[in-house]
Amino acid sequence: MANANENIPPQIQGQQTDILHVVNTPTRQEAHHLFLLAKNRLKDISQWHHYSGPLSSKFAITDTQGNEVYKLAEVGDLFSIDIPGPGPLAGDGFEWVRIEAMEENINEEAESEYITMTVRPVTNPKHPDKTIAHFFSHTATSTFIVERYQNQVSAAVHGRNETPNNTETGLFDTVRNTIIALSAREGMSLPQWKSLMKGLLEN
Image (cartoon, rainbow, N blue to C red; front, side, top):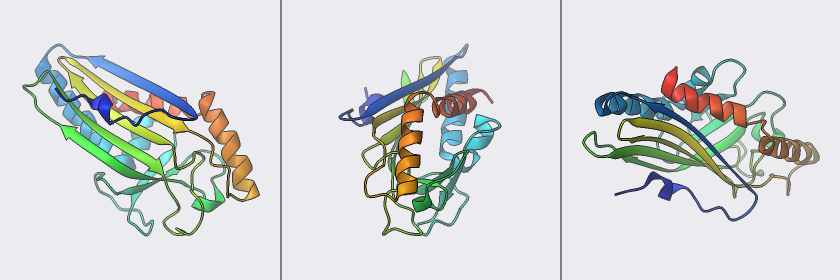
């Protein structure tokens, strides 16, 4: 049987984070319907801030030039993240990531079904010649997993190889990225992801 966790990149350097929210349902059919709802919410990135609640970051899928588009996520899509506070100069105020992998395994009759989506920091599409536009370096990934196992549905995000993006950056971005990356480890970004994982399943 396929295992969703096989799509999480290996941890090699830096920090890792693992956030999980679980909902139990009375029947497998109800779990399947909740899974489908959460799967579509996961792919509807432009609405993530609604699922996360007030004061959360805002997310937007864009085309290759960095212009916002309204669509469900696919491999290769870029999306910007507007976190509270000053953004990186390299990103014109936004963090930027690309969806580098997605896998869907959907079967209501099976014991489990899942969708996984892995994203990685990238350069600002409006200034592709500049440095990575994110507080984490290009080595970092975040893998989002929505999974049903029997009557249980879970939403999780797994951060791997989280190192600050503080080389080949300007002074402002070097200081800013280091502070935010270190703060993320201590819990700055954890409330955002916890709220989103809960919102995917329960809002």
